Image (cartoon, rainbow, N blue to C red; front, side, top):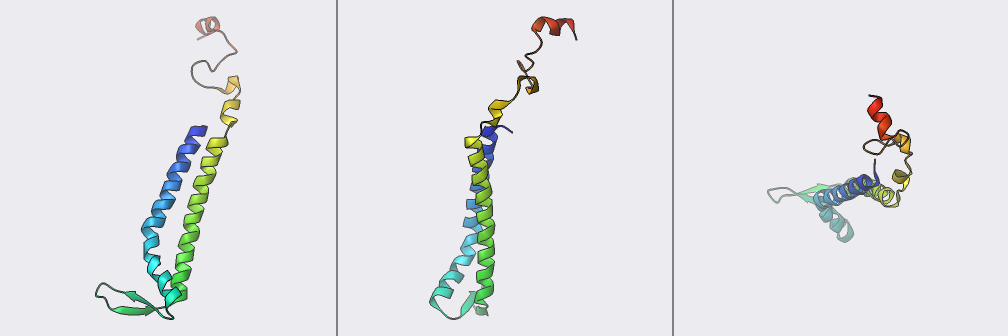
Length: 115
């Protein structure tokens, strides 16, 4: 793949990582506040009835989600850095190039003679 593709993939994956964190991270915001401020944690249902939950289990879920998002962001960062620093795309041998001007070994007259 070309270097610009790695840059585009890196930006897209980084964007997905931030979107996942924004969408799914908000459900863990209240559990973080509850564990810092209180000894017991509650989950509020749609009817505003508090249900006692295990704080450690919810914190473990939060940490697993956070590790997943960090993995997505790291993959995007690596792809972005590879695209920015990549010079291997410029080191292609002329005989391996495809497209117009890729075959430098034969002249235009030889191409006309040999179909």
